Length: 192
Image (tube, rainbow, N blue to C red; front, side, top):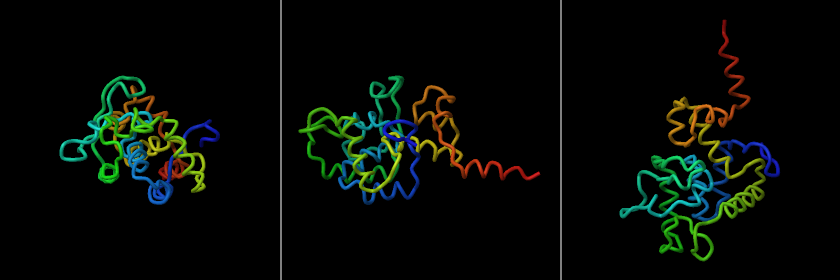
C-alpha cells in the first residue's frame, strides 16, 4: 500500500470503486479521466494526454480507445483498447459537458491550454480519497486494479500484456497483485 507516495499503489476493492465513481468524483471530467485509467488500464499520463480524436469520432465515442506511442511510458507502440460500456457512458456524459470543445485534448488543461497535468489529476484523486477516507490509493491504483482483476478472471497474460503495454510478461507478472484470499485459495487446492 502507498503511504506518502512510497510503496505500491493499492488495488481497489469493488466497494471503493463504487464509492469513488458514485460519490467521490463529482465532475463528469473526473469520472471520465479516472474511468480511462480503470477501464483501459491506462497510466495517468496516458489518460491525461489523450487527444479528442483518439476517443471521439464523428458519430460520438468510438468503440476503440487509442493510446499513442509517444504518450506511453516506453514510447514503444500505439495501443488500441476496446471501449468498455461503462467507460463509454462516462465519456459520453463528459462530452455533453465539455467546456473547451476547440481543444485537441480530451482533457484540456487550465483555460483550455494543453492537456490536464498528471499532478493536477493526482491532486483531484488525493482530495477525493481524503474526503471518502480511503487510504493507500494513487493514480496508479486504477491500472493495477484493472490488470489484477483481468488476471484473477483467468484472462491469458498475453492478452493482458497487449492491453497494458508491458514489454515483457515478466514485467507484467511483477506488476500484478496477489491478495491474502488468493493465497488462501491456492493452498486450499492441495486436497491430497
